[in-house]
Length: 113
Image (cartoon, rainbow, N blue to C red):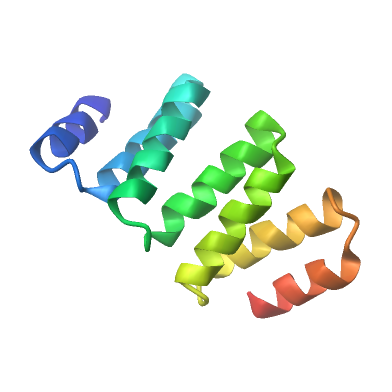
C-alpha cells in the first residue's frame, strides 16, 4: 500500500487523499510519527479544504505529540472547511472535555456532531 500511495503522489503531487492515506499508513502501521505528520501537512498544503487531513493531523498532534493547542486548531480547521464533518466535532469534544475540562464546549461540539 505504501508504494501505491507514493506512486500516486509522484504522479500527482496535489493528490491530497493519497498524502493523507500515506500519513495514516505511516502512523498506524509503521509508527512513523514524523513521516505521518509530514504527509498530513502535505495533504493540507495540496488541498486546504480536505477536512480529513486536518482532523487526522489533530489526532496525531493530540495523541502522539501531546500538542493540545495544535490539535485543537487542527480540529477547528477541519470543522471550518467542512462544518458537517461529524468526526471532527467529536474529536474536538473529547479534547475539550479531557484536556481543557471545558464541559460546555465539549457538549456544544458533541451536539454539532
